[in-house]
Length: 72
Image (tube, rainbow, N blue to C red; front, top):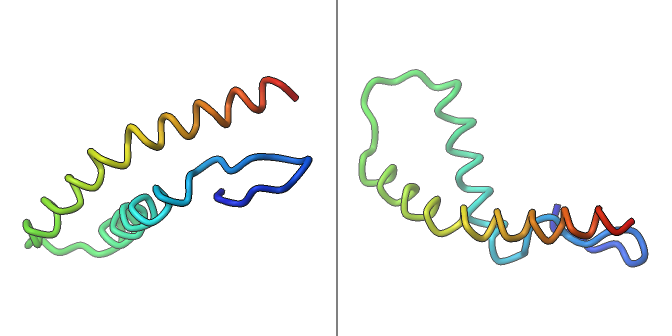
């Protein structure tokens, strides 16, 4: 999703936002299959902060990608 392929497509996700989005995805996947009742609330607080930062950037990235797709 971060690759630019000249004359084919632009990245759908910016390099700067890839790391936080990947961390959120890894956590989601892990929690989905790991059923424990005790949470690491400090980690969750950290992830919430990352989500609040990453979400608007992802929306902007996808808006640019959608505009690109509309032109082809």
